[in-house]
Image 1 (cartoon, rainbow, N blue to C red):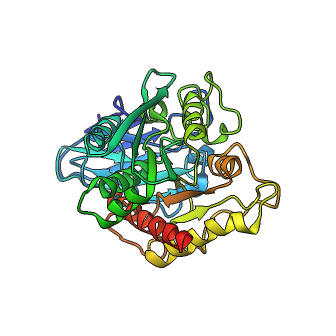
Image 2 (cartoon, rainbow, N blue to C red):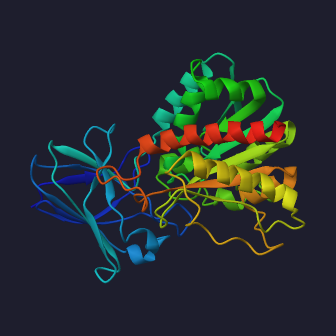
Length: 379
């Protein structure tokens, strides 16, 4: 007999229930459709109030990023608004890699996820609220393979063309929490950073590049198993209509600065990745990226430059990725912003770890750094 019931039949849900006994469960993560990627989980547990749950997610040595599990605590919420962390341990030798989550609920239901989810319903609220703000234009860039709209928000009166994209990888929900913070800043008439940027720039936001993967509970791919951040060199309507639509709009507007927002499974830090390996890269071209990184590092203690990805060798950039393709295509400053699933090694917050709230605050710091970057250009 089991005292709990586990299900994931909802927007962005992902879990397979292997067995339940008492308040214990053995679970596994479902792979993305037509793909080997598996890491995102999101499920709910109906349970006895005050009785400790022991939830074991197994088979994680075969997950997309096994290095993401050591030192990671699962996210949990009982109201789906405030997300905290549940004590978790990883044993690579148990059941082909097992994350054991222990949590004692104060009510009869608890929700667990790899990171605080950002539902398509909340996405639609975000789009509607921003689109109703003064000076904001909504543009439907195209349609996904599941028939969802690809939403873009445009604003600002300046001549600098600034692009922000997020959630190419749908399980990286940090990215859309970041977008929410950025849009709140830019649509607040009292915010001086938002006002100044809208005077200087024309800004373009695609808060969710992968609605199909988001709804399906994927980690990294769209409805047909395409990793969108490997489609930027030659996107197609059959495999990656999302990238095709965004890149086509960029070709219409031009790009002076672009940031693609992501989450990283293993590295306990916020960092940037650039385009050092571009063919024919000049010091002048790379200087824009380096200057922005320095400004952001100075502006917020939640950002750092010690941890991050290895730099590509000269001429060896992967031009199928958004940042490198955009930097090459438009000769502009472009970058990938990465946020953690784990807590920050340098600035831990034990109750929530890296959280939606911190994603949103980081967004405003990124926009303030952009304003300073633009001012330095004009000086």
